[in-house]
Length: 231
Image (tube, rainbow, N blue to C red):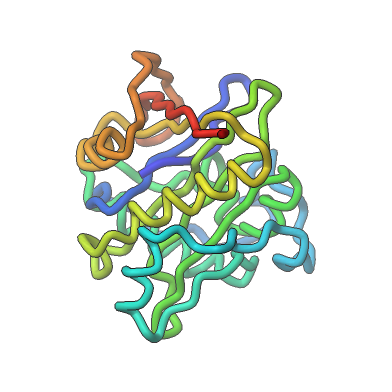
């Protein structure tokens, strides 16, 4: 798992692949403007219209898993997806003791995903299967150093071990190549060991760097990097 946004003082992306999640998630606080994090844009009618389209053609590693889900649709995120994203990612976190959503803070982007992604120049896609969001993944804007950050990769327990996480990572790599990136980076919670194994199998190398998010879950993350073939 990957990809949350750390406080302004020290960037912080989150966790996310085809792996189990964290545990003990508390009741979700009532949604209200007062609960919004400081870096989340004010409520608006922003849709996904300004977000990057799903990269095409789809990576070969994703077409197979999608073909096995005839009722599925891969699309750009909408603000209306907020409740389902919170439910999905909350369930993932609940698989890991001590891991909880931080909606007023690091996870405030989940309350208005399309609005936040549009404001930050990010890409964010969801996989809907039979009318429910089963997976999500995002990509940060192209950085000055030529990197794109892989973010918000989460797959519902019911849809794991089907190759979806692997295919979604390839989707972000396709997007990154399209925007001229030379590398992909990601940060992943130290507890998400299955995710780390997935990333390594896909050519992502741990750099040895760590960062603390100072969040309610006491999260520490590892940094992974993979160069892209630009030929």
